[in-house]
Length: 506
Ligand code: NAP
Image 1 (cartoon, protein in one colour):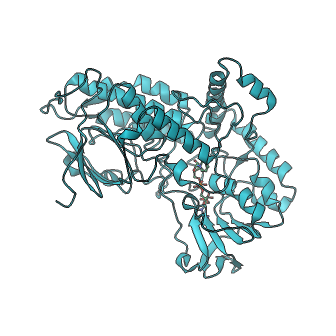
Image 2 (cartoon, rainbow, N blue to C red):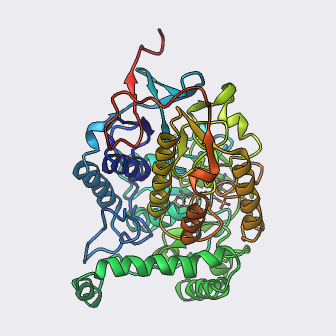
Image 3 (cartoon, rainbow, N blue to C red):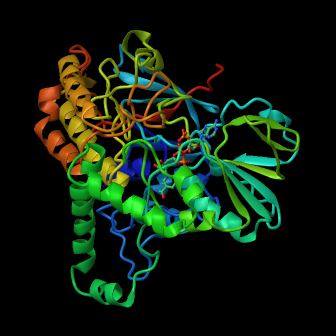
């Protein structure tokens, strides 16, 4: 069996396989380390805006009585610890970017191509995440810039930005976290905003003395996690659907903006004109206040081009800068790119998705037997914890593998009708959200189809998965290839045959 990607999804899948008594699997990872986005994003100020008691695996609960929101390095350390303690490290192939995955129909398994060769695996789990390929906008003259420039997820630490003149393009969650750190030492920071985002304050990074004392009580960490889970489902999720909390949240955000930014002209520029939740809400307590600093300027004229020494806006102003930081987000709707995935009949998945990426609960696609996704289309939780969503997907994938074993077939795939029914449910659920009424964001593909977020609460996702058992929604992909029974351990979930084969060129 092959897992592709060693972020939260891939590590979680590896741990689940080990716990199910399954040893014969390989995790292919393109990078030089585990961690996914928490390995790649090292920009100043990078930390998760979801409390780690929630942003962690339930089987490896976060138990810190001091820090509520750990920084990037601490989250990376957490993932390392999980991988080491759960004995997943020996399954890793680092620096092994999978470029092709082809379903071998007669054998009911997958052939995977990396730069060093080919492997065959009976099952493949794509755990590549949604936010890992940087998006660099096609701004005229971008390559003409003579200074230093980089994307937030490819921070170039060789350059000291102290005392420099910096342009930050984009005002999403990454920009909001970077701005206070940059502004503290830069000569000047110009923040180029196309659309203002909704911002809500978040509690301090560290717990206060009362919370610390509370967390020392038996069972308190678990209760706190549950409270966060309940809070996200009951308060945050309804915001996206114009539910009861949308108005109070918008009121709170406006009041927060009013208190933080005394200048009415600046406040007007920062006031969103689309419903709260239309784009991912920024949770940050230092972004607005930093915009009041004398060395920070919010530029709302559209970026028209980039020249040798700076950024030119549509009004013709030339903003001379030494450094350009692209906080312009990720190619999130291009799922699985650059892996070329060929399923039954040689159909390329990206072509199959030419009318919009879609998958059964974000985890399986008809025509792609024994292939599963973690964090696939419409399974990003914009209102809570994504490690939690991934755990639900991992549990479901294990159940699919058990079903395959029970059926005694080489391959199973999600039924077309189950997919159609799920699509119908998704369409009506998405229609009830604020996303159709909001402009472009990484929630949507180039044609405006909403391909990334899950349109309900995490609890609804869990409940719906329970109601859509693999027995009812998956079927044997081919009746004539029997389940491979040789060498299977008594506890094996599935037979795994990930073997290094001939080099790709041969
Ligand atoms: P993002 O939310 O996609 O924001 C990209 C920004 O770039 C937007 O403000 C966008 O403007 C702007 N932009 C894109 N092209 C532009 C152009 N040609 N000219 C001017 N502006 C342009 O990206 P992100 O901030 O990296 O965040 C992505 C996601 O990563 C977040 O939504 C979140 O899920 C995750 N994240 C999480 C955390 C955390 O703490 N958990 C932290 C950082 C990121 P428009 O809005 O007008 O399109």
